[in-house]
Length: 117
Ligand SMILES: [Fe+2]
Image (cartoon, rainbow, N blue to C red):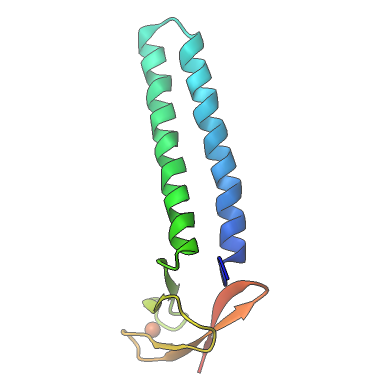
């Protein structure tokens, strides 16, 4: 299933993608309309920066679709990273490499979460 465990993440990224695409269009339009070369350059640079955000978010979505995105959580005990690697299954276990506590990958309402074993 595409995006299994990422329901909220995908919704947030889709909303952000629309915002970033709008920003690219608006800054490009501003750049086309102004006559001052310095201000034109500023808006062109803003549009380029927003294009970078669009590209980054699209790559993130593709990595999730392709199962190439690692599922990680901050350890609720010590704050270190607990990594379930790529394409984990609900019920998989991972150990925090800092404090040694073991967690189970669970899914709640379409989103991955973890539970201490
Ligand atoms: Fe930990």
